Length: 180
Image (cartoon, rainbow, N blue to C red):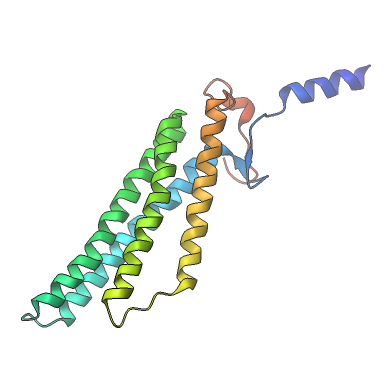
């Protein structure tokens, strides 16, 4: 009888929510961590694109306005996309902190849109710039990162929608194997 009571209490107190990657942490924590990483990637991308932009502008002669416009047309959209990525990442982190499924879902969809637009820009650069080579090895990490972000965001939204991940229930759902 005692074993049955203990087992029943364990089942009643066990979390209902999904854990990120099956054991890493709860989905709220995952949304905050993964989207913080997304913010850092985009900030690094802004600085890298800005440095490449400045370097490319230096290499082009002042009288070659067409080449300067080409650099503007190729690099500035990348910087704009990275800025949008930062804003969407911040939105997702705020959504995770406030249990706001709309913020997080909007960010999840934007990650996929940014990925597609980024590949369109890459393809355009491949067609327009002779020296540019599209490297599929560089495509794999961006698809993996976008997939992980989308996975985490969608499962968080699902849990908030189902009432599993709420401020009131978070103490029951909180889980982490390695961090606070």
